[in-house]
Image (spheres, one colour):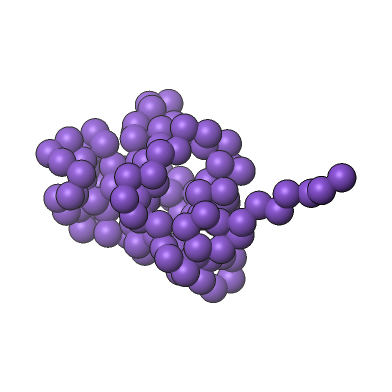
Length: 119
């Protein structure tokens, strides 16, 4: 019996890691992974939104730079910019903290929960 090894690096590794966390509706749009995200904490808890993450070509050495969010929710800490995905999207410039200690998709999703806890 042959065992199929999931990719762990680059774009294929990024998409596999995202799928392994239960995000099974991921579509790749150019260099972005777009998926539905249920906000777990904060003012928008329970809402389903769309997130788009830039796929780092050197994943997992580098994390995505920050999420693209739709609909536009704003963020109290600022650093919210227009997104190239269109008027209904915004980009939150929020780099993941302590990436060198845990370079996993689960760590990046914890980072997102922290961002939404403050939104």
